[in-house]
Length: 309
Image 1 (spheres, rainbow, N blue to C red):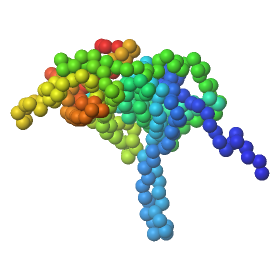
Image 2 (image 1 turned 45 degrees about the vertical axis):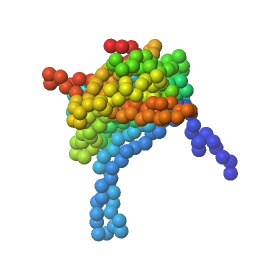
Image 3 (image 1 turned 90 degrees about the vertical axis):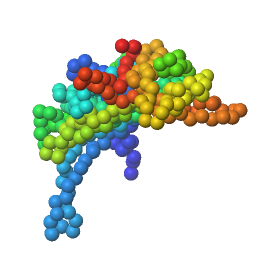
Image 4 (image 1 turned 135 degrees about the horizontal axis):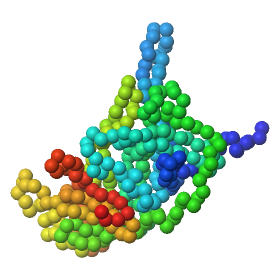
């Protein structure tokens, strides 16, 4: 019996494309795209069955991957930084996405978007973007069971040219970090890691997940700066204040050419120190910025783009 590799092992690169029939944006991955259905079942009990029959209650498709770190996609990967709590994450208008392989296997998703933002790691030796999670739900103008409600799959797609993959846009530089008047253009032993946590709340119609809304969001930055004194850190963290006092806040910026991040009204919540002849004194600082409001309007906890606003 012969082994036909072409039918057993299908291994090839792919790309994720936003708005493929309009103004496409190309998202190249570091490794593979993990495509999986997220399915919820419910039991249909009956005395004639040894075990309950199961049927599908909710379904959406999820893609997990780590993108190469191209900076031009930053606004797409980090939506709703200034969004009102309760705002739709997938949007009031459907945005189409396409996953296509080099041989032309193609999944078209009529309504999709990111439900997990990537971590930003700004340091030489690592690419900028961490893992992301992408979700595709039923089209807003269709119901489950209709043709193309969740996706359309074909095998005759046209793979885009690799000219859309530009290595010069993959960011791996060392940043300069400024925190109010505490430190300016500081550098650290391990760069800086920025996490943009948000809480997506499910929106269901007849038990089917059709969207998520913004429940809360917080930006966190972890940094090990050089050259700061104990007094500077103690003051920045509010360790000399009375218990219950309002903590100090300041603007934290992280930048280099083609990359700019702000944590607005950030507070230094954690500090760790090490004392020894072969270790850095500041073992780590953690800064946090949360969603606030001014005159009834949401104030973004941060800003992420290719340059300062």
